[in-house]
Length: 474
Image (cartoon, rainbow, N blue to C red):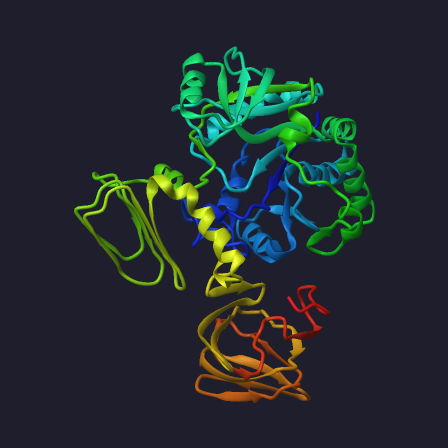
């Protein structure tokens, strides 16, 4: 019997959850709804389901590859990580996964799940997957329709005539409605929220996309055929993929096929697409406030406050979102939280870095935190994990001075190799070949002062790298 292979789509940017979610550290890689990240929750969702593979396929972009791999390792989940050469929406992303899965078995059943959804009732979700399996194995393209509990205008809908929990034919897909139409949909009992989750065999999906979107199929097949695999990642060929049109599964396949069926799903689902949606899935106090971090509220109702790095106090607020990070603060009406995307678009147009990175940036060897940044100099705190090592590198425009403030580091500087402990320092001149390693048992913290006429992160030449980045400057 064909196995269920989870396929997790982790390419989203989560712009409506700015400033916590950023393009280089999006919402699916953050612990927004619990102790684990949303990606980790998604990967664990099928644990215990009969017939499900212990391995999953994750499709993500190049910039997130180390975060994705590390988060999955931390929960003991084996994964094949497919790196999209460019974001082209969900239809090509799933085509890449299906082509790779079909090599092991064309009748492998793919369970496609976005990495950034919340499902409270795992048992109900697994039961719905079980209801759709027979249809999927028979060649149908199964989608899951969320049983609506309110007239929602922020989701697309699927129309179908339910018959219990079994798979039924899809009559049509419907765009996001206005409020009046959403109320009619809710009252009819024949409209379900479009979840963006799917169940089908690799063969069924590839046959459908080849017939209905042949340009996507051709580009993805050529890209997979010419792919380059390394120890941790599958890299489809970027030149072949460049010709791939962008489109969603819904537009490219599901709205055109005559093989679409739907299984109703009532499992506490949310796509957590805004701060208002995140407020709704969390625990609130008696005044419907939800807070995290160091927060003090006085006479506030129906308010969401998240404090990352300092005390946040609020008085007399109603229907408000406050999100504080180390380098940005958002204040908005909760009912207007979908409009945060407009702020992100403005910041992008101005070239602001706050849309891309947090002040603390994670790397495969640890992290760095930008403490001060002025013309001609900047100060960072580096944290290098035990057993980790930075690339052997040099800079053309900046010199660096390192001071160890916690732990112990092994330094390479040109032909020298030496250890540094707390309150010891060294100077790296422009052009010096250097690296930091931590072969010891505890993290090492280093204060780095950079001086130079250009301090961009791309002023780097990697000569050797343990993480496959040699020859790159990102």
